Image 1 (cartoon, protein in one colour):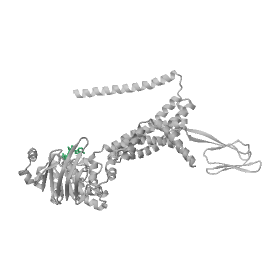
Image 2 (tube, protein in one colour; image 1 turned 30 degrees about the horizontal axis):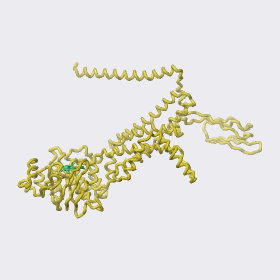
Image 3 (cartoon, chains in turn orange, yellow; image 1 turned 90 degrees about the vertical axis):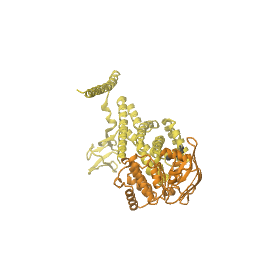
Image 4 (cartoon, chains in turn green, orange; image 1 turned 45 degrees about the horizontal axis):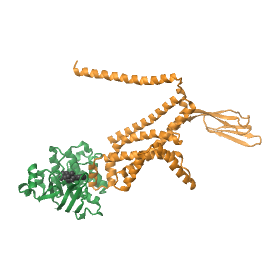
Length: 243
Length: 338
Ligand SMILES: Nc1ncnc2c1ncn2[C@@H]1O[C@H](COP(=O)(O)OP(=O)(O)O)[C@@H](O)[C@H]1O
Ligand SMILES: [Mg+2]
């Protein structure tokens, strides 16, 4: 489903940072991959390169066989197929919950009103927010906002969902409501790439865990492997710090 | 008595004290000004001011022929006087005004220049005409300035270097030179060029008013562009990323997500800009556009009541700018509530 071959990403402003160095990864359809790693290790940059919010400098990225980095690729089509959930929710504050979920269905997918209304309602039901459909995001708790953001991404019927630390900005009591929605999604067979520090989630849901450090993938394995027999010294150190 | 209520009492007393100080100083300024004008024997004649807003003028209709009044025909709204001159030719005078006084009677012999009819009519005075022109110029220039500003603001943040450099050049040129000079350039340079070319091709000339409006619009446009740019850049980058990650195009993201949010933040500085525009329009008098300031200047030279008239002029500007700021505040409130 996702095929990343030797990508590099370097930022030059404000100063030179090699955010991704020769990263190669393959993610199969239906797989749930959790990416862990210290702050600044390039996890977000990796996700953002997948839907070209950041453009990799070198290498190849294929999503469902489409060459993401090719100049003639319609990137908006690719992005519609790749849902993304952000640490800071990024809901549209001037739109109601319902409008947040339906807008892109209307203007990107061009669905007729009846269809997008139905999809919106069923998704809001799925994430447990249907009673707040007429409310503006500022009147929701963090956990509720993040669930709306997930519904908004799902509304495009994506083939892949990318989560960038979806629970890091939440108060502890709201983390589980978001993780529950994500677990449900994994159960439904969604292909997911999740950057998170929630090791419980990784252990329970992940098919594979990727550990990144300083722009490179250091170690890949099953959750089992990671929590029992990590190989690299850096992995061990990191796991010791967060567990 | 508790110390908190004592404190409150003290605060109240100090509030009243400083309030009184304020009014005393204001009265002193006004009184002082008045006293000084008395010292130089200036006579205030406020009663002469209203005529420059609205006045009753008497109009006379004179006969152009010499002959006999043959008929005075009063219909519902029209009066027709028929005169047969010495050669037997028939001449008709008709008048559609109200409150017409007929100065002759049937059978009278009138000479050329005799008054047939008089009527009184209310006319708009020069100050009100000036106020209206100021308003008109400001509104038209604001609309054009807004359009120019929005386009230039977007061009300014565009990744296309040509758009960006055009925008920067335009903004820097406009902001770096005095408006008065720009008005002269529009009128004496561009105006002369355009109108001379138009004459060569036998087309109609563009009146000076439009060069004045153009100078104000391009001037305002540059400032609006900077306001628009700042407004858009003030919106969190996460909004762009969220909308683009859903597959929206740049234009969709701008129209549905970024600009509506930016617009709310843009309104207050925009109000300030349009208020400046109303005031800056006073410079147009220099190219013979009779807006409020020029109108006042003309009235002052004929009436010799400069003190009253300049105060009135200032107050009229104040009325315009205050109304504008109220209007935009209302708009802002309505947008926040929606
Ligand atoms: N837009 C950017 N401009 C400059 N440097 C960036 C940008 N985004 C990320 N970086 C740098 O790239 C490195 C990796 O960042 P990131 O992918 O956000 O790490 P992580 O998500 O693992 O914390 C960091 O050193 C960060 O400072
Ligand atoms: Mg990150």
